[in-house]
Length: 361
Image (cartoon, rainbow, N blue to C red; front, top):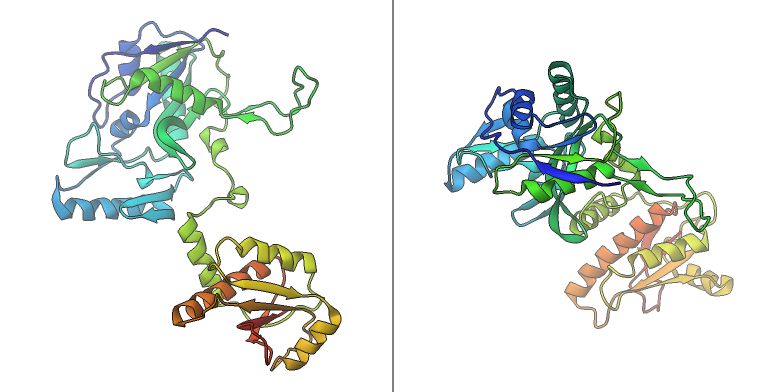
């Protein structure tokens, strides 16, 4: 495979109502079937009128931007100072819902296209019907990555090619069957296009040539790239997840299970909170039957159905601040136990014990 990445020059400033197909076809009469058109989402938004008016500066501008961000946000993922990482109504997780103030008048903000896949399909159809061009279209925008510095362009909308190249079931040169490999090829092509578009060069469209012969249908679009919520292992920022856990722990109902608690599940719950509890906080499951029986006799209010016990001790010396933190740590453990399917009851520590509290399971 030999790829070329070509800039489309001369498009100029795009305003509401402009005909993108005509602008692109005029600026790039050399387009040919099978090309992949990488179009910056900003000119799509401008042409579609996805702009809002805001004050040019001052507190009023910040307040107006916050209102716009709230309207574009389906869910807040993380917030640190002025930075907001949110999930948009499209399902994308990105900073500030993709709202952009660059390459636009100071009194306006550019929003993401309302439906980037539909925008890609419409542009592809116009080029095919009016200019007899069979191309694939990618609507791209810039995103950060949660585990890496720096920005890269990714695909928000796609028409005329699959968003993902699925290698599962193929066999590598060493005879290994691929089990998990699915390549987000449209993101890679969007990033390739950004290499020649840039941010300050006013080149909003690039062409990747040599990758494919475009598909006869539009495909399902970039929504194939949005991970289902139930498969998202990082759906919240660290502080947000911790706060949600504490909120859940605060309303945990007291009670024990119908069946004996699984010792392995109890150990997993204790391990899950080991890195977040206060240094010196210790949780100890009591497993020896005779020892547990002796402790049970000393625990006031031991529930009738309880089958197991976890003792918890705060860091020493335990002043007021340490006890408050220990209370939060107990709720963290109860939440972790609940996630393992192990209900619990918070009780005072056994008489004569150095523990601060006990959880009956």
